[in-house]
Length: 129
Image (tube, rainbow, N blue to C red; front, side):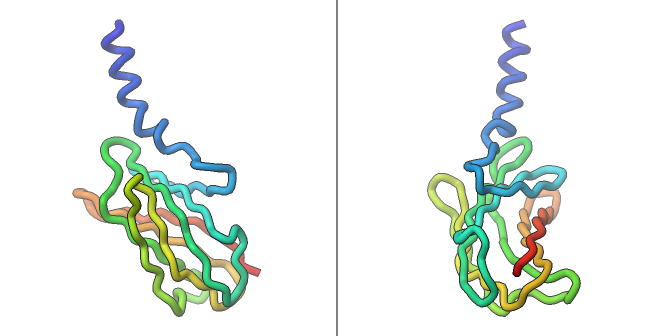
């Protein structure tokens, strides 16, 4: 019985480890991954650079080593005029700098995770005024 309980707790660790880092974080998910995203500032305006903080977790197993971040406007079928640069921190979180929304409207963040089974894309919608 204790062995079954211990195995259950170990299996639950990836899910527990990927809780929201704070109240301002928003969740995006795919079949195998969860991403928590936070913007600095919280509501970036048109034409102002901002930073994306991210925590990306596998639902099972180790956190992904390769993650890319981008944003685009699905209705217009174009991305940003700038290219964000992401760095992974020692604690496993990510910081992507250089985001800039050059026009108002419906934007979508893209988080691409490479795995042995292929690439997964997580998305998060955001309305920019």
